[in-house]
Length: 229
Image (cartoon, rainbow, N blue to C red; front, side, top):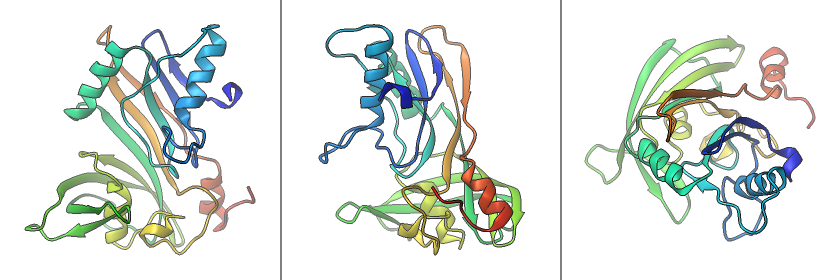
């Protein structure tokens, strides 16, 4: 497992890694391997640590989403980083490849979203309905044919927020069949956590960790099709 971990930043307190699409952030009832398992094995082998190794999860990415995930190496770091995510002081940037021509070229989307927990599906609801207010800003980066590459900056961190808000405007994320994409891809959707900006839990230094989107996206933008995986 350790060889497959792409480390973006590491010190005694934090471990930022590039999560591949299709990998769970943390374990669930299926018992399938998760990013936490991979990180724990990496640390155990690198530092020759016997027994259990602490890996704190302070935020998550959906399974089919790739990109930057920040993990904590100590309980103190986990507590301080979790608080930053709770009060929304962490800067998040995503890259999304969507179907359709996005216009206007930039804007702010505001919706009220509610989650059906039995079906694990989120939908836009009326302002008076139970739900949570969600806000994101977007900017068009490139357009080619029926595809558009977007930069996304969510101001809130709700479940499936980016996927639902874009789909509700007729811009489903490529491969996201759950929310309206007509394109089937194997094991991932074209949503990538491109960067995180946070305050180091000990030094208080402002840090930004970045990751480039998968190369498969370039083929889709250039040729209108994905390469064989």
